Image (cartoon, rainbow, N blue to C red; front, top):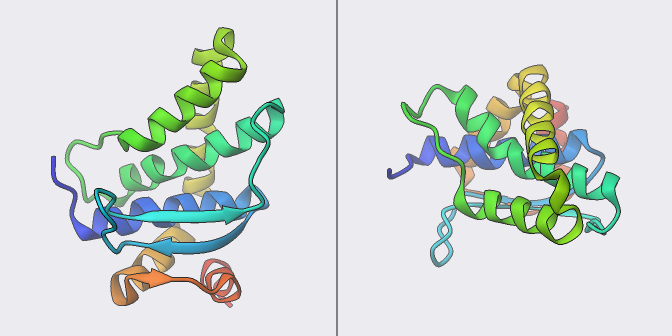
Length: 148
């Protein structure tokens, strides 16, 4: 399945809004193709995934792209971003293999809840991404997400 630019924008905006909700600082949101990647979102600080609560926050952020993509109405058949899912599965497998289903399901549910509660923020950021392709100023990204 080939994603549309709108779908990619919603996906990346979802990661950004969920990262913001989880207390991270979003430093980059882009829908510019880079190698094989169609979009990317970066936040700080990096979590220590050996700590359960930090790993769970990172997993929720990773699921935010899928949750927003699902809510966009753009994709008939929404699929998990392979790299997002691989990242989550490797984190859990490394640190808590016996909790795989619990942590994955929990991250998915929480990401869906956050996206539903902030759908206007996701749409606002996705629209801005469609106009500009890339945002690299953390203060500006925050203003867009918070609507100020």
